[in-house]
Image (cartoon, rainbow, N blue to C red; front, side, top):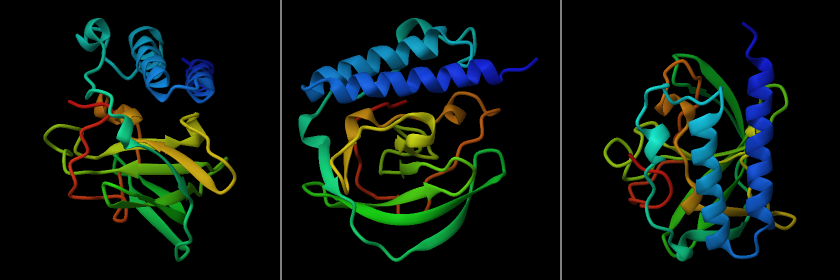
Length: 198
């Protein structure tokens, strides 16, 4: 069976959800829109990584409470260009090219910003923090993945990074999905209790 039309629709709906979040002037309201939309997609869409009998389809995903101080609009800082091949969740690899880094002032976390080097590319900003493996997925969470529509915008040369919208990759719920894992440069011992949790 060809699942590509369903996958295309999934990505389109994710992109539309993030467009609604970007258009919302109040970040807390944008967060509510995102949570409701993400729960709806995971509950109803045929490409949902949740098993048909998963209780999360009924309850929705668990999230930490919204914290306004964990939303940042930050400059994309220069970083030494680097090509990297990282592991994915299915014993595969994904090629990345570092294009800069962002500093999240106040929690003193600096993260590398990557460009997905495969066809179509896109910004990729994963995070593996001090909650990984206990309170959140061990492979980390994603903040931005523009190839799949997860984009919070930002002025020229800047990115909106909202830790309240950190989400588990699909492989957290279904091992059939291929997910790049957070590389060195995107890990921190700081426990970031925001966004999606276990």
